[in-house]
Image (cartoon, rainbow, N blue to C red; front, side, top):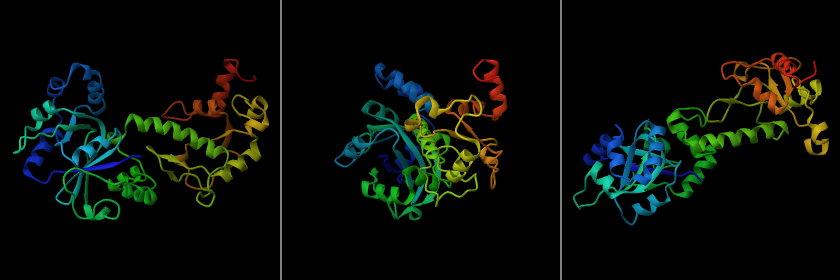
Amino acid sequence: MTHIFVFTAGNPKARQHLEDSIKRPVSADTVFGNFPESRRKELEEIRKRTNGFYAWGAVPGSRNRPNWESMEPGDYVLCVYDATYQYVFRVLAKYDNERFAQTVWDRDEKGRTWQLMYFLTEPVEVGRHLSEFGDYLEPERYWGFTRIDDGRIDRISSAYGSVERLIADMLGREDNDLPPQLLTALDRSQEVAESSLEIDRITHGDVDEKLVPDAEGRKRIALHIRYERSPRNRRRAIQIHGTVCKACGFDFDKVYGPDHAGSYIEIHHVEPLADYEGEVDLATDLVPLCANCHRMVHRDKESVMSVKELRNLLKARGFAER
């Protein structure tokens, strides 16, 4: 489960900390000079990921330490002051490092330092008043370092579908189309897995047709813009074209057997889905392709190869009937 943490920066010392390690990154010399050499490789990965080191921390305590210990890479962190969500980040790594904290932030009047520290992605400005999300986060104020409790996370998931969608809403972005600063390696791996699952759902028609109109081009929730396909259009296209790949002639039923394959095929949109604004011509706009050929027509990110061009390429290499 993805969690949300909040830190406040309401007093002058905290505002100075923002300047020292959030609004401008901590220098590489300071970081490498205050961590053991054994951490060098993972720190280099953090610097590469964010083009610098953005850090925050909490002083040890009965409340702060359990919150910090529950923090995991990929969790979201919000910075709050003046009753406003000012910045949002993602957690990259955490360390209990008193030496680093003292070097960067010094010590407080009790001699403590913010050694329960964590590295963050580059800050993204939010600028939304607490009251705007009071039904899901805190409506009025926060005290220090806070972990949004599981009950509120469940409420967010029920209302938005995911924490990512809430964050996107806070940023005024559609669905969970997050800015690149907030995307992590975990997101990219998850995106690949979700894309594969989505293909299976579309292929087998496991989409609620009451929620998906026949018109193509409705924006789909994703880390980048994707578009929903109508399962009804898919079935109609198969009725017209069959389930044999129009580029290489691969037949899933023939190779794997109809009991297992179940007429598996992917439906390719001849024009990019973003270009559709209404009904498609099932006879000319939709073409059945096997998974390999479907990937290959979209291999060039700037343009879509025509099915005819791909078929000619395969013929020239001896992989399709001439």
